[in-house]
Length: 211
Image 1: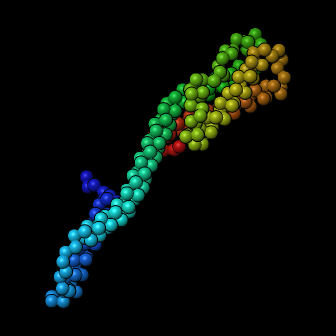
Image 2 (image 1 turned 180 degrees about the horizontal axis):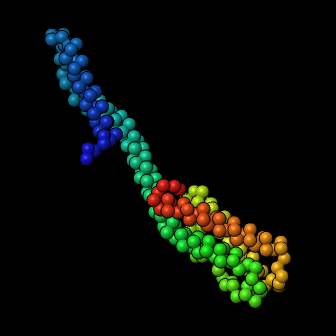
């Protein structure tokens, strides 16, 4: 594969072009016999002149090279950060699918049993709406999933609400009040809808189509 031209290559090419241009101009405009009388060669003066020019070149090149290296390091760091975020998103996709699907199924099952007698309701599992470890593990990185991460945060809050509702449902005396049943059904329906929206987009996140 052809390697790209670097700033160092451009610098060297510029020096060569400058030297070639100087020689070309000298060849075009110099007239033989018009040169001044040759004076004795002053070595210290030439050494001082060359040293001064070298010092100027070094003073220009060193900061430029440092800045170029800093930009390269920053670009590499950004590429590593982006790659890490992509890997985290893939891991979260795999980790979130099962608990979200379980939450959706639980909402459906509880909704079917919400109007059963207390003797049956009290045997509903109390821990079905406990927060899965995956939600706590990735809570601080859900923003990397964009809108889907926000929906998962909303689902977590809804899960906390339904956990308290389930405790009341297991203890509430018959007959259940209409307001209580309506609130419980709305909460379960909303939780199921949140879960279905998330489950619909998680496969696309795994393929890298959305954030």
